Amino acid sequence: MHVGIGGVRVETRSHRNIEHEFDRLLVESLDENVAMILGEIAKKVVYEILEKKYTIARNRIPERLNELTSAFETMFGAVSSTIIVRVIVKRLYSELGLTYVERPDWRLPDYVSEARSRTKLLNNPVEILLLTRRLCRIHL
Image 1: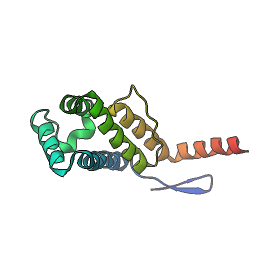
Image 2: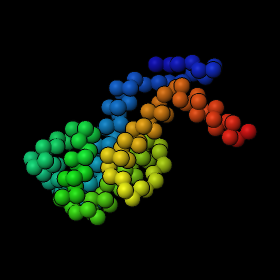
Image 3: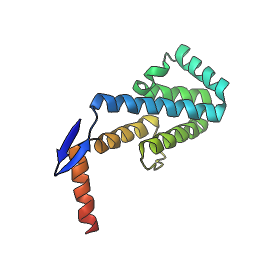
Image 4: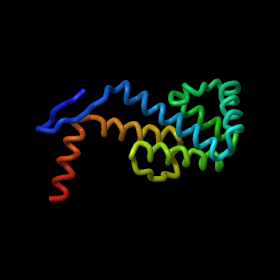
């Protein structure tokens, strides 16, 4: 959909498409980074454990981030789980064009929630216009 704002034509996507794309990037980030850190075979084992022991299907991961985080903490320990999550989140933020800022007390659901909010902001034409105006005022 195209929306004209102040003479500027802005391409928008439906909320549903944005959410689907976000979830796809999240799972893709998880796939690539678990494989990079542990190896492809171990990644398959991790998904099998998540499915059988924790009933977390790969396609349901975005809906079950708290359970996924707890499963990672149980499987890998708190420190290793934190490192894995950090790598996953850094890639996700990079793919979304967001700046990653480490927050020691945050877990995976916190980072994903922040990324979702920031992504929605950047895909809302009215918010883009308001943000652009704010930035123009700062630089004037």
